[in-house]
Length: 397
Length: 118
Image (cartoon, rainbow over the protein chains, first blue to last red):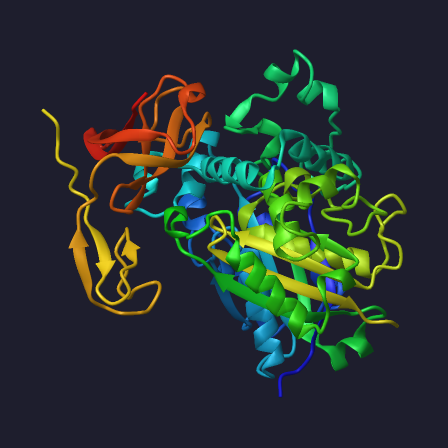
């Protein structure tokens, strides 16, 4: 019998350009905050899982989990790096969850982090593109925004998504990000400046046709961490534990070209379905969601594939405010990847941290989903070829 | 001189599903035996994008990329030879060629390029 697992501490540092800090600094700062939040400031943990994609390439540093436990004086805790592209954070949380659920470890630190701004944008784009197929995609110069552009073109043709729909996601997430002290881009945008004026051509140029600059998330530095333990132990340790009620993970073909219908994000559907079924909930039971909006089209497509809206309805839902705070299903109230930023290894953990903030009811009124009891995350690796999803539940004090 | 396209695709001997690139087992039925086939004829454009933030290794302003289907159903990604994206449309026919697509360590890397047929 697997044990129920709860989150008893979370930590996050402001995302953005952090020239003064090393990758190890970022991981350490987020971890210390999570340890303190869990009341483990002078204690140890049994194991540490570090979600990271690029230290070997960007920092020319490997075995970073070993470095981190040493720096944090968590020796002799077990320590591993989990690399799963932009879903590294979600996969790290999964590894921590399974380790505690199995009964092998009682207390686990999961931290996700990435430092991407110390290389040029040219190099960062290439780094992210290393997850594409090395023989039949990468040599052509394909980038993740390029894949998203191809996907968007098909989604527009099949489901009638328009630039107006994408714009609604951009404006909402920038507006919410401006309220989030952890967000990379704390700046609201207005419709005229990026959409329907002569300035828009300059302010918001095409990045990967039909996607424009403000349809893309920024390249960020950042880290986020959670502390996991068995639910029964959690109830004794903290006032409001958050239960990991459901988890799912699924994969899809490596290349876009081999998908029978490239607009069908099968791994998103499967991973979120598994997570919801494990939690014994339906999409309609979810109070707040953090979806992987590396590109605005993905928030719309994922909101449909998770089952919040029917296929073809996600764009209209964004325009009519159904995904805003106070709407039918508030999505990316943190600002999402679009505004919080996307330090690839950190994102999956940051999504979980943001849902924990919501379920502990500790956000200011202008960001708190009233009486939120359930939350869902989707962490999207590759271009949908490896997706991790969680359902979290508030445990009443 | 026109270069022959050296791509090999793999048709499952059991269910007929066409794979490119190679897989050890069929994505449809898990069979391990494949017939090697060459992509044939012109291609149909399935989707495309022009990207303006190019990765390291590409010294140009933008790049147009697409996913296509050959006449014998092999699907592949490649670069599109066009000055503008305005002339492109999903479903249009293009001619495949095998040309340098980038340079690495001073050497040309060859790959698929598609020329629109208007």
